[in-house]
Length: 222
Length: 217
Image (cartoon, rainbow over all chains, first blue to last red; front, side):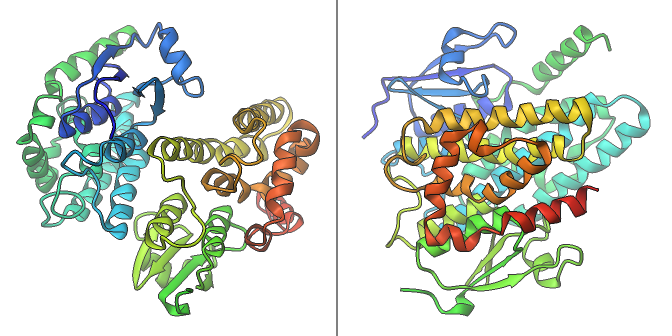
């Protein structure tokens, strides 16, 4: 049985990937020490624990590091398998689905969303907007009439995607779009997830994320 | 023991390293399957039906239900056929490490190669150096162990060895040698190639080389 007394999370307050881990830890009721990293000046501990990528989040459990957010969430589920709820279904086929959709968020949602504030020029931005909505609609397709992404329970695929809901306000402002109107099922799913304490108490307010992005853009001279 | 042929179907391609990965896993578990060679220049309705999101191979269809993405397929095989050769460690920490390195391989090997396959001159040289850098990181992770998994062939070994024919072909194009530049990896690969599951799944490096040349010229 894994002990909860030796868990450290190296993270950055607004990172969607770090938020995944924080939600998973909250779901399981695991106590941990949170350490905020300055990404412009990474700590020796971070560089020691993630020498390959030098990125957050890193979960350090009993002195041993686990990196990559989706991998960390699955590790949390297995190391604390005796604590409910399960973060993955028990059926192998549904587990494969959960992993597929968590991976889809990484491959498609993150890339498409970033482009909204990274592209310059109206034409490119329109292309980025179209791409993002297409990707979100694929997620809506997967959601269907189900309460959560895979099956009836909140799990890995939901955890992978819900931190990006914090981005919606920013994407709407910068992209001059309305994600909630274009993807009402996804918006309903966000509200459903926000009813969970692990989500509502963990996610930063969307306006704070918007301020952060504006700050970043100012520094880059936009 | 083995499933009936129609129970497990793999849609893949002889030239695809990700297909090889799945074939190695199924062979290690002695699972029989029907293999359907996909013509990637003219994707079949079967592939489009079972992988509408990415339209890519490999796809494994088990009792009519599709599973996509090679590492996810290998994990599915591990969790569904619990007897026989273990494809992943049972310890959660070791499993997370295996997943990390397989992910590293997927993040860097193919995309790293693409940077020099089509490039010329200085850009090509830079790409080759970067690619060798990734191989050296992997070599360092292997260390003195016979396999990435320790004493026995495992998940990360499967994740990397499936690229081997391609890496040899990349070497011909990029003018580097796995044997000379990453000798430990060479020794490891030679060891892996002795496994029937591996030698039968990998394409002939010469055929891969010819195919790459045809696509990159």
